[in-house]
Amino acid sequence: EPEVTQTPSHQVTQMGQEVILRCVPISNHLYFYWYRQILGQKVEFLVSFYNNEISEKSEIFDDQFSVERPDGSNFTLKIRSTKLEDSAMYFCASSAGGRGEAFFGQGTRLTVV
Amino acid sequence: KQEVTQIPAALSVPEGENLVLNCSFTDSAIYNLQWFRQDPGKGLTSLLLIQSSQREQTSGRLNASLDKSSGRSTLYIAASQPGDSATYLCAVATGNQFYFGTGTSLTVIP
Image (cartoon, rainbow over all chains, first blue to last red; front, side):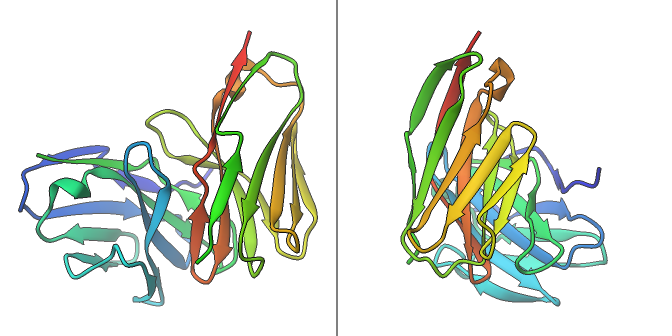
């Protein structure tokens, strides 16, 4: 069964460093998303991406965040200068249509020290 | 802004019991509603998707209903098993994003 794949599963980084989280969405999907979940809190929306551009972003997704689809398969989230409060589980998701079923990856646990 | 609430926050039942998880949302202008399962430290597994025009969906022992006008959904789990123990999340789609509830943590006791 097709699945969304995220790497790495766990990343530890020092405050102020740049990190790139990687995702391979399901191959025929056209809509891509990043969400995050701080420990013990709700899953929160960060950004949606369609047709090679951001279609919606939340207040969390400020200038330190960026997304990119560098080739036909990968979808990345970059955090330019990490802060302690960026520590969270980051989930990538994809869907075939804008109102279709969303499939989530297993997540990348980011720990900023 | 869409607010999603799930009750109860935690539920513990003996194996074999039927149970209902509740989800409510404040803005009825949704495209769809999706139920997910999350195991500790893991990702989100899609269980059921209900489009806004639908009233319910079934998959195996799971049945989800949607009453969009009243802003409510329920997830019914029949004949619960210990393997059903997990956190169940409700998410509603508005615009280009999902709004998630805080989840119901379910423990099924053998």
